[in-house]
Image 1 (spheres, helix red, strand yellow):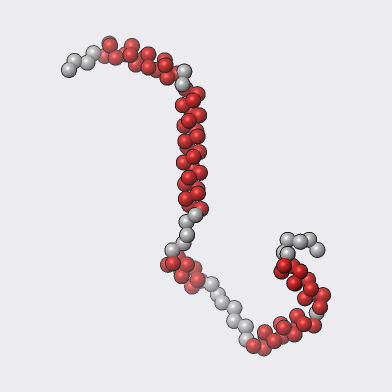
Image 2 (image 1 turned 135 degrees about the vertical axis):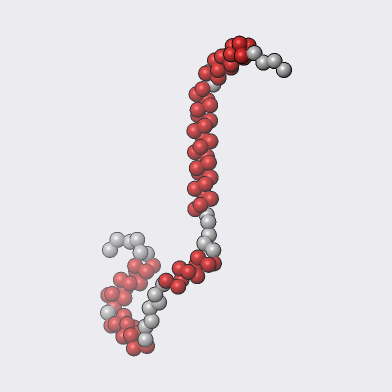
Amino acid sequence: MNIQINKIIPYLKKIIFELKNFLVPIFILLIVSVNGFLIYKINEFSNQQPSTEQVLQQQKTIKRINLDDDAITKIQKLQERNIAVKALFNETRNNPFKDN
């Protein structure tokens, strides 16, 4: 098989000239493809769930608050005593985004 460079060069020039007409659509297609790929990967990463090992490891680092019975009864008595604060707590518990 005998390939001559002199015959290939005009053929390549013709192909490059015809591709110049499609330069804008090719560029737009490239941009849309890259953005589509990025959206796909972001969606994939945002929907990942942690493994059970990761959850257990994070739960070990959480410090639990221990309230004794005396503290609980004191808190309940304080809540019962102050009616205005109790109403405020109930209102904000039901609608935390409401301005007071």
